[in-house]
Image (cartoon, rainbow, N blue to C red; front, side):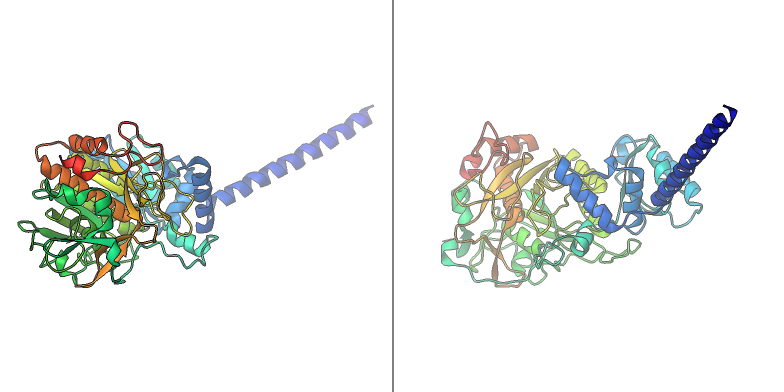
Length: 498
């Protein structure tokens, strides 16, 4: 009996020892795995899976290890939003909180230099260098941190390299320097010899000009800048029937892949997209036989904030944040139009949008234009934010049939007809002087709708932002009950300005 008990005890000891060894090995293996960052391919796959299953991806809702992996694979640069508000002026303790965050980073990183990359003047937001996962874990436990995100994780760049459609020839940049002769059926000639795009008739814009041309209102356009070669968006911006107005060109983009680089790249468009958007909203009405903008008497303030429409890197996201805050602080600007975005939220841009909105600006953002690998995405960021009016493009004579490359969804507020049965889009000024082109997608729908808002506000200069929006809604297809995917639909601009 004792012998049997002995064998049983021996077997129990061997069994439990083996289990303990296995457990210890498993724990060790887990620890090793968690100490290694995920690859960029693994991160992108998880982001895509989350968007497809949940509709949205957020770094805030990710695990410590996943977030640290994103920071690690993004040049080890993080963006931190802190304090009780996005606005520094509303948070008396902002400097003390910022110093507390920096002290914690220095403690866990074990160094005191090259920690702080930038500290925003107007927002409770800083960019910092972080290498260790322990730092990320400690920061996320701080009560005063609103968000902690990778500041230079390049999702689109990685998707092109590792994604299933990496070899696709489709471009996502939105850039192009083409010049195309306009088909005579795609415009109407208006005095003194300007070309009004076909969409103007569909939205009753030409008739609306009898009541308002946008005079006295200023639109801020955040994009890739404006071509220095297009005189109608330069020295000839203020002529013909478009007199008594101004254009101001600004640059807040740093053209470098290295986050520590400084020095803005100037206001000149090196993509072509920003030039098209400025044209759609505000090109002059004169006798040069060129396409005219929706609000041809509006003032324009343009910002080169990024190299193209994909806000994928540190300097792109930083440039857009700066543009929103500067336009927010520009008392002459009433309307902001941005036809760029991302498929998930960027905290510093979100802060910039909220800051501009808090200053009374009416903000229009593109609902999204599909690329080869983002056609599973609905309305993009920041158009989905409640502080913005999300715009998408629809086909001619429809208000609920999106253009072939446009996005739709519950966050859309208005639509604009920008795709003909023939396939033609909206006529605009080319990058090059004296030449024309076509532009499409939710981008041109957004810039055109910003121009419509300028017409309404110019007709009613004492109105508030909300009064302008309400008038636009009341003059649109689906008022008073918005469509589930297309908002209030197309705007009858004549009705909106009467």
